[in-house]
Length: 127
Image (tube, rainbow, N blue to C red; front, top):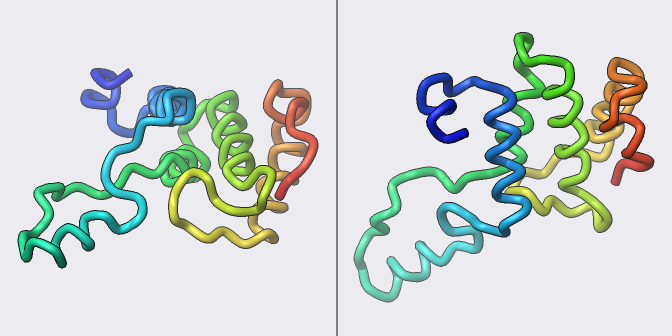
């Protein structure tokens, strides 16, 4: 998956696989709660992490917006993007605030455009 993304950064299937890896393992890249800023304040040393914190939701949004993404990858990305807010309506996949209206639109898109897909069948709610 990583070698695929290295060769083809917009590969929808590999992007979803990377999101699934982070979801299943609980691993993270970067700092989620501002630890780097706290460290900088304590040491006056800038963070050595120059990258952006990885967000599964950003990855799912990338696949959702990709007109070339295969239907099974797009439906899975919609499923996971909606599920980022389950069950508390708070984003568990990153720091973005996505409105409930947008999440409802994703749900509707999943249920209509991808009706009958495993992702559409499994998802019963949006949060």
